[in-house]
Image (tube, rainbow, N blue to C red; front, side, top):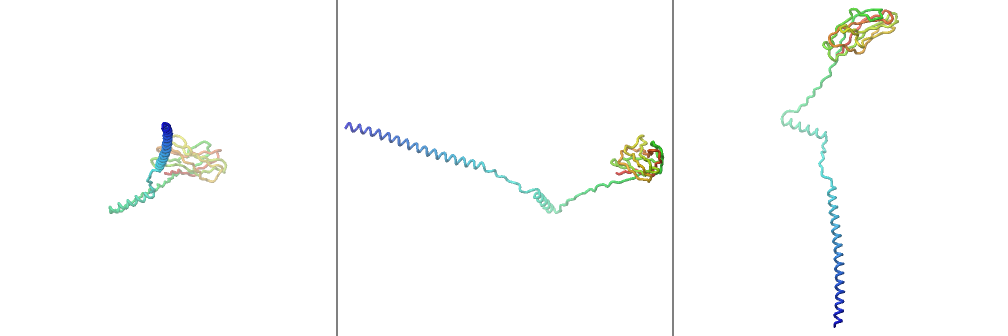
Length: 221
């Protein structure tokens, strides 16, 4: 009998040990399964969150361009005009460019000289007040008909500002080796402001007779 209980006790311990091992293994497998399910659930949630964040925000775009807006404004204007009983009238004012005028001041001749120095063409002079008589934006030039005797030599002419005692810069013109009266012109001149007296002056290059037949001052304003 004693031997029986000893064997029973031995088998009971073995049974309990196996039971503990079995339960431990079962709990371990259950833990692994639960952990895997938790990982899968976390991955799905993360994917869902990323997907939600990656979606672009909803934007409202204005598909009505400048032409569309202009048409809308025109339609609104017509509607307002209709309601008020008065048609909408658009008035355009176009300013025509002002045409410039040209005036000439005659300088009478003929005047001759053989002097190789500048001499006055007696009586061939005129007063000019550019700003007051014309405009502050007026431009001035002059021209003269010159010739040199025998077609040999050179004739010179210029305007002299008697008021200020100086030659007008850029007014000197000349004709070379030409006995035929020929029109010679200057470029634009710069005159002093105010009313000034301008006189024609002549000279010859080599003492051959030079002739100033006539001339004129041109003013564009």
